Image (cartoon, rainbow, N blue to C red; front, side, top):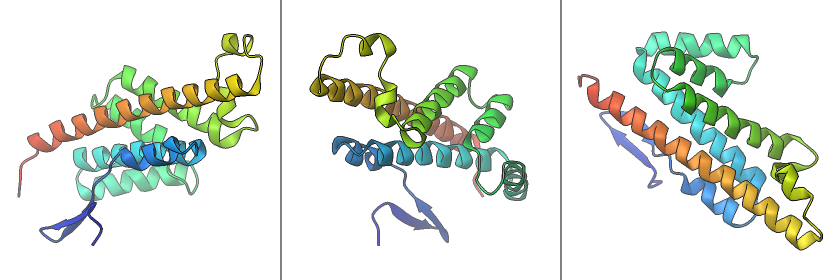
Length: 167
């Protein structure tokens, strides 16, 4: 069995770990790293939502979000709900939105991760080696912020889970 999968009381759980992002990032695969990081953050947000609503309410709410946004589940919508419920702060929501903006830059533009370089830094780049190094630094900085977001969400989840009565 996968060491990240556990079964307790008939419920199967998967342990989410940011190392799933670090591995491709360390090899320069930033598209994969940002996609994985975004998926981990969204999955944690969905788990939070399922924890604050009972099973049927949570699933109905997730179905409504999917219906409103097409087939894909919009992670930003989940985090907006969590903010409105007072589960996460506006600052954390802003950090999540900034990470998702960086993710979209890397995954959905021609510039890819090079688009993350600050415009002021672009003026001082004279060669490809420097350009590549600045891109890697910018991508890693955003991924570090993604890790910080992920661990903050895990902390929120643990606080909520510790307050929930056990059956």
